[in-house]
Length: 462
Image 1 (cartoon, helix red, strand yellow):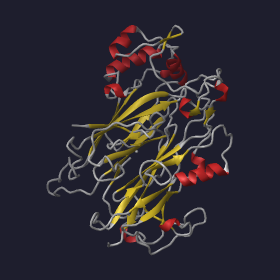
Image 2 (cartoon, one colour):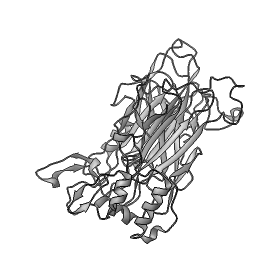
Image 3 (cartoon, one colour):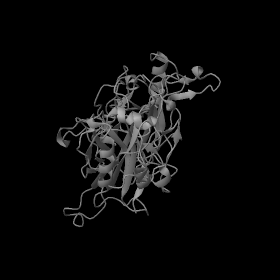
Image 4 (tube, helix red, strand yellow):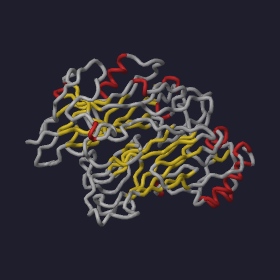
């Protein structure tokens, strides 16, 4: 049975019952942790590269049993050109390429710049996929605002509901800007759905009673206004450990594979702001599997890699790295992510999701965020983080002060707190391996996603 997860950091959750429900940050079974599109909002005719961050534990299967052409993981990417809903399991109202071709041709009659080449709903079976935006911004704007008449036969064939607004058919739910300015009612993006079906490689520990296969869906908001600056993915690099929260004792974790480096390709996206959900009901958004579990230094061959107990970089903010330190078991240490404030981009036109207070008597007094929010979710192979949200929980982030036109020192302090957590490491008897992987996923409020990974060498006891 295939499990469906919504990859979404904005944060309502799906998912079946998980054996680690009370500790969703623990990495034990294969899981889709995040999906990233680069760029997050591809313009008309541009392409986005999609990749998934997938956790894979060390293989436990017999090597002879797994020998053969089918031993590796499998991927199946697809997309839906219309919004989907959790009410029906995110089923696409466009069932196949033939139906989409008819729908595409109908739209192209009024928007000839679309051309005649109809893209397939299948995006391939590679570890990454390419999504090309076939829709002009003015078409998507018209779909959101109800300025496109959809013939009744298409509505009936696709099972789409009809809403009537000022005599116009509005069948799509698009994110609109805040209503403090009645003259500013352009939609922020047209939500399409991308779907990834993933089967772990042979020898991977079984996920649970629901079977090994994983499915994640997430939303990409295609631009409806070419004049707006497109969203960019956040930028994150190294994870640092601070023993006793001493700012002069920060130790960078050895980088895990694919530790958040940008994809050198042309485009991708996110959900409701752009992300993914995971099996335990956590949200996050992702690329190639995290494999193995052996401490590595960002892909450097083992014989050339620095030992895991040696500082690999100079931490920012003037802190001094400490070499020769193993991570103490049965202790609580600090972790923080090198995440610059500039990752929170200015919002030229904030949306409804950016409203933090609505004054119904005087909409002009509504408070909105003028900069993106940044959300962090932490994961580890062992131990636990502080409960829930907050300064030292498994979730953190940055919420800028409202109505600002420039970020301030107070915002910098808010982000400093939001990018750190506390990690309680386990005893030897509870976790035997000599290292533990740590992952943090970052998402902005418009669907941009990135992540960083690290490997912590653990003391042999207690």
